[in-house]
Length: 176
Ligand SMILES: CC(C)(COP(=O)(O)OP(=O)(O)OC[C@H]1O[C@@H](n2cnc3c(N)ncnc32)[C@H](O)[C@@H]1OP(=O)(O)O)[C@@H](O)C(=O)NCCC(=O)NCCS
Image (tube, rainbow, N blue to C red; front, side):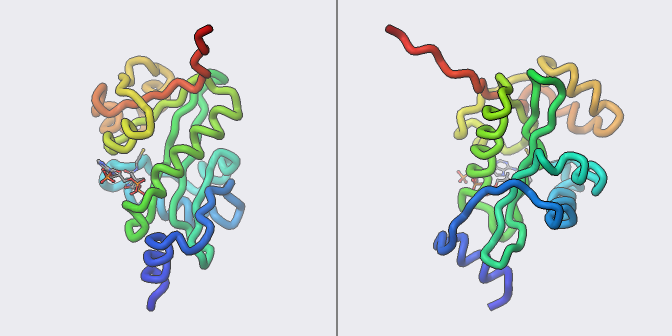
């Protein structure tokens, strides 16, 4: 069985502890490669090695039993009150087994632990984000995002209202 087949069967059987962990220095090249695999289709924004190195503390990953990178997610801060979930990606052979959901949960937990009141994301994976408790929003609520990415990706900005999702991270007050 080749490595990919081993990873696929392990994902299917959950035969090893599927843990989301903070990324390490040795993950940088794999993170860049997995992220940029989806950039030509506009599913992820192209990321450079320099970007990943300088934001490594914001990346979380899932590895297969042999240590190969199966999935990743990152937080991209705009201000102490505004953070975006970015670079969500799962290796093609490992998709459809819940890793995306786990990575979104991990990003949410990290954002909560860091005290952000809200997490937003721009994505075409609408059912996934709605299932994870996000609601549809509009990029117009995030002028910081528009300003930062105007020069990088017109296509991402042009997707507009439909594919912007947000989730409040503040606890809902209990009644009584
Ligand atoms: C989006 C992605 C991370 C999901 O990872 P995953 O491990 O397959 O996710 P899960 O198994 O937890 O959930 C799969 C669900 O995501 C949904 N989904 C994934 N990609 C989708 C897309 N492009 N459009 C619509 N729905 C999508 C599927 O509807 C599926 O739902 P189902 O189980 O009802 O069929 C993965 O498909 C991926 O890496 N895609 C390419 C990069 C990308 O689009 N990143 C998102 C940028 S924010």
